[in-house]
Amino acid sequence: MKTPTRRPTSALDRAEAAFKSATSKPAEAAPPKPVAPPAGKELVSLRLDRAVLEHFQDDGPGWQDRINDALRKAAGLD
Image (cartoon, rainbow, N blue to C red; front, side):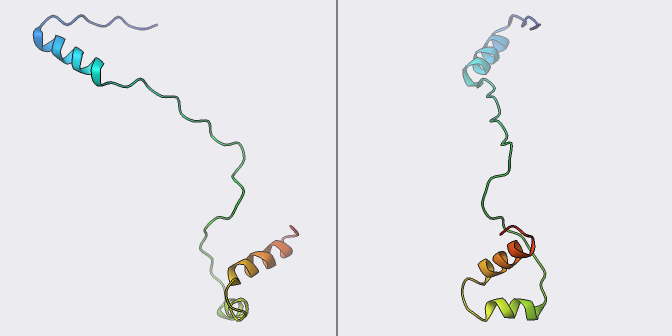
């Protein structure tokens, strides 16, 4: 139940009420949260042995994708 608003009685109260009604925005509903996490890649920090990192970097650019592919295979996702 909405409580009745007090009627402004002084000029200052009326001015404040007019300002508030002119500058206030109605509350917007929050957007719905996604049910499942979005598909794609996520930035993470990971500690690897230097030898492992060098192994994947030896073939040049794309080493991060090669690490991802090896992890997917090890996890049984491919």
